[in-house]
Length: 287
Image (cartoon, rainbow, N blue to C red; front, side):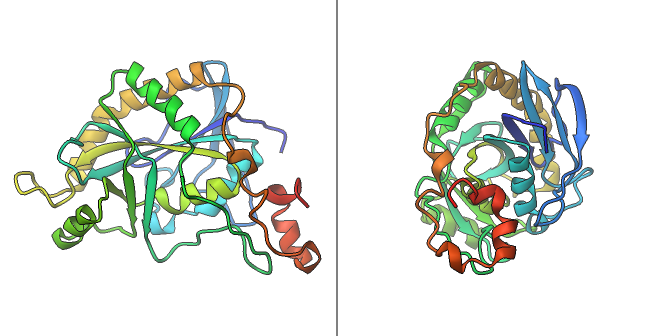
């Protein structure tokens, strides 16, 4: 793959294309983990080569549990992507995180149970560090861009990922609040963890669309409610990405690019050749 892309945008519910991309072309990528959710659209944004991937496919036909997360991240890695900005919808678990606000979380609680969470396995073991699952450097640059675009933003907070596709019960929502969670969504995990294994910086621009179902004076979340808020915020999201592309630091000031350096524990001679070949893109610089 000759295309080299510096940054990728993964669009979630309500964001299925990236306005302003010039000189675009769709790229079909095959990976050892299957095909990604949709063709990856690569173009130029503010002088930066940027890739856009619709997480739920064209027309939003892929459920959160069915998103090919490994294929998506691996495909972006083949394009040379070093930074990923995830744009997603979320429910607020805090009074002050109001619908229409933006949250850039710094923690994830994985409450899913159906998803493949790692590229490794099949005779090859690695334990990647994710104490801080979002890239601090990229999150900071994203925060500055959203503020400049005029968004009401909250930096930090724990993002709990639920399996879906249903929304939470009141008992679940109140439990998450009791645990200290800040926002709830369905796609942050395993996406962030796979990005770390691929040594790609990852940050989330989470758009608060509702108060989930815990708020006694607000209506419980519905699809219509989510889409209405996301439609209003689409311009803000796109403007923020434009500003980020303009201001993006050329060099990464973080350790994401060396995440596997001390993570792999299997002796090279014990790794099955087929597995080693499959993961060559991720591990060749170390082995």
